[in-house]
Length: 366
Image 1 (spheres, rainbow, N blue to C red):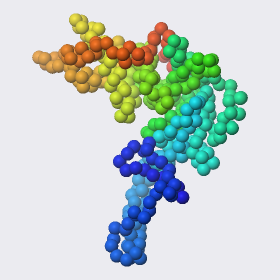
Image 2 (image 1 turned 90 degrees about the vertical axis):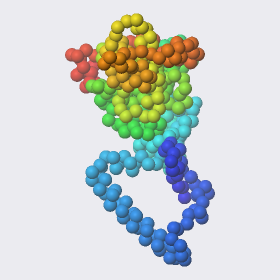
Image 3 (image 1 turned 180 degrees about the vertical axis):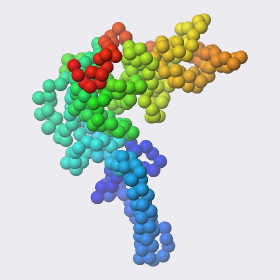
Image 4 (image 1 turned 120 degrees about the vertical axis):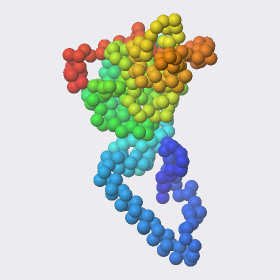
């Protein structure tokens, strides 16, 4: 027997499959005292009653929330324990609806680094590499930084549906609340790659997506676990705002944000806003001016500055002023700031669609 174990009070990424040797059923005791037969009978009666109550609540929830109920059922248990991606074997955190039989795959998947196709055996992966025509994501390369060994491709969910579906399935292994896997045609994907120094190709290390016709500049973001702590997450956030600047309108990420997402965005907003405000010292400016310069939406600017205690109310007016200690900390030289990966706008080749072509682009036409 194999048991699926969820550790109470912990994130579901720690769920695991355990064989019977790791489960001590002798410690499970019935709540009702008495003989064993009485205990079993009474315990069964209690369980039957509780099951009946749960079933009634479940049936009611199914009628009122059929989609939510289906999602809650299919996402309870991981069917893939880890994936082989390039030189890495990556532990998976959450369920992803790969159409595979977990017993046949051994709960391991082999992923092509270039087209993201998944296989259940290493032999199948080796054969696939011999005929795979991809050496980078499909779509247009909009950014290349040879010095830092990275590039970014814009991929249309309508034009390259299979690639984007495979990307979403892979991302779901590391994102708990992601629900979009197959309906990708309305999205654009900005895929960050590391350039192989030996010329083998460009390997996907992270991405963000956004709707083609959108009011958000980012819908989903991921950096694969082996490539985290390299500044790629904040680079992708910065890139989303640089695209908003090119489009001539402020942007904001789709809500709700994950805990990690809130931390990452607040860090980016804090750095961008302090840099802009300190640059404007001695000038007269407004929130609207800052929004136009940074492409950060006004609401996000206000919330961030309030959290930093930079907004003061004097004579019925709101004044932006950076506290001296915060200003000193921000201006103090930092190795982390100097090393952080930034978007070089001179290397960004992105041309937003004009109003006349927007409808064509949203339909994936040439």
